[in-house]
Every structure is written in C-alpha cells, then in structure tokens.
Picture (tube, rainbow, N blue to C red):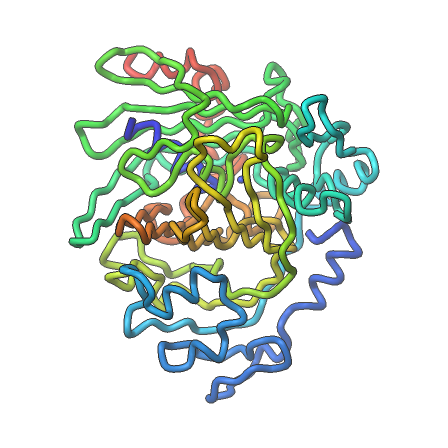
Length: 451
C-alpha cells in the first residue's frame, strides 16, 4: 500500500496539474503589488496589501494575519503540536504575474459559452461541451463555487512532465519524535486531452476518453525499488479514476479499488489529496465560495534546498528565508464537501481550498475531519519554471508540498530532488524513451518494468 500512496502523493505534489481571458488578465495584472523597489526598513501595511520588503516574524505576524489562511494562523499561534519555529521569517516581495499561455487563453476564448453546467439524473453536477482552456472564465451563480472548482480541475498544465531519471522526486514523512522516512522515485505525467501547448494535438491519438495519466516508480529505498503505480483520469468527470499498481515480487500489475479514497499508508495524504490539492470525482462534491481575498504564498523558490530535513526550518519543516520571497496572491476561498448521498464514511468533513485567481492552482488547504475539527494543514508551492515555447508558468510539474497532521502529530513533505525543480523535464526537453504511450499510460506498460 505504501507504493500506491507514494504514487498518489507525488501526483498531488509535483503536479504530481488566468486571468479570466483578457479582461480578467488585465484585472489581475493591475493587482500586482506596486512599489517593487521599496526599501522600507519598517514593516507596514499599504492599504489592504503588504509592502515589498516587509519581514514577517513571530513578533509581528498578527499585523498580517488577515493575509493568512486559518491553518497558517494556527501554526503561528502555536495551538497544536506543529507550530512555527521561533526564527520563522517570511520576506515579502512583489506579486509576480506570469501570463497564461496564448494557446490556453485562445482555447478559453473559443470555448466561451460552449461549456455548460448540467444536472445529471441523480442530481449531481457535471459539465458538457468542454473542449479546452478555462471552462468557466466568468464564473457566476448559480453554483459559482463548483464552477471555480472545475476551473481548478482544468487549469493549465504542460502536456508532458518527467521528474527524473537523474533527478528523482522525494516524499518524506516526519513523526513527533523527529524520525524521518523518505521515498524517491521517477515520475511521468502526461495530459492526453484538452492540450493547448504548441505543436501538441488537443487529443493524443489512441488516448480518446482519457484526460491524464500519472506513472510513478520507486527508486529508493532499495527494498521498494521498481514498485510502481499508474493513475488514469478520464475526460468524463463522473467517471472515477483508475489506479493500477505493479508489485515486483508478483511481476504483474493489478487494479486497486477506486472506492478507497481515504486510505493512508505512512503518508499524511489520501488519494483525494492528489493532483495538487484535490483529486476527487467532481460530481460527488459540492463547493461553495466563502470569500475572495489575498493570502501570502511562496512560489518562485529558486534557491530552495532539496535535502529534508537539512534545508527546512525545523522542527516544523517550514521553508527557510533562503527559499525566496513570499507574495500576496488573490485567491478564491472554497468550501468543498462530499454531497450528502456520497458522504457516509468519508474521512473529510470539509476541504477549505485557497485557489489562485490567476492560474487556478491551490496554494493552501485546511482539512477537517468528519466531526468538523481541524485535522490537517497544507502549504502548497507550485514552482515557477520555463515551459518550452510558452514561457514562465506557475503550473509546471515542479512542486513543494508540506502536510501537517495536527491530530496524529505527523507530517509529510514532497518536492523535486534538485531543490528548485530546474531539472524537471517538460515537453520537448523530455528524453525520447518517455514518449512510449504503451509503457507509461497503460496497465500493460507496468508489466514491462522488469522485462
């Protein structure tokens, strides 16, 4: 089971996956924090913003608490076992907007008005007519929260991303005694439908009906080497994803139950925490928009360290100041829950997602148990990288994630092993062998691992 969870966890972390067309792009650009050359020595608020150059520490964090998700405030308050280190420091820089790819924006414009929100016979929500780009570029009532969740699901992502073979991604667990356990592996993500990258077919021939696949194989530790998983997501949102695992001792692939969405195996994530913050079957959930606000986030982490725990601010496992600047991002705060008919036995009572309004990635999660008590907090850090032929993007396949389980006093951390994601391979930079669709997108390909 650790193999399955490792694969799903890497799916949530590395990808491992706008402005609202031009009008919203202009609006978001206007929200970029001004005065980027500020050299102010004193911390101070500027209107409802934070001046670049501000340093947030344990001494002054309450002045900026309105720009923090609930979970981040709880870590500063020291309410639980996991709490901010005494030397914590958030150095605030200017907000940087990386425009979405022209192809993605063009697909959004072409599909404007074509994507329809529908109600299925059983009362669940779904969409029809989607062809690519942002499905709801001007999301409005009714069901605005669910539409934003659909925008998150179909946010821009490169067609092909490989983390390895020379730079393996890592996932490490940390317990309350400070013990660390890590897994490293090779990860291949491929978007098979709704592609907008230059030179890539919208739908990959032979992959009709599939949205994406994630292939993950353990390389370290040695006793788990060659254990692998394949996750297949489908274009039909109402179809649950398929998950296959390869067990070296058996030398064959086997399908796992799609119903076990709350399973944990040594990590602090569940399958539904995958795909960078949420990997549930969308029609099984309802989503309500709680607010539109600004929160602090850190994404351009060009000097982050790859070694856990050495390059983290311990004992929490928080990013050190050397990782880079924090910035204010405009976000949608969503309350996501299982619909009543699907909620029996489900682990989470609600998932509070903070979704960036410009590129629609999740930046923070507050996760509650079935009794609505705080359970887990997660800092999600998409790493800004250059996508060939596209330019710098926030959604690139490079990612750091920090999950803190405040009830079980356990934590999990994941990211690219070179420390900043620069060795993550994207599109045409991917070696030729990873273009093999049979090997990396089908269950049969798993059985080829030891042959």
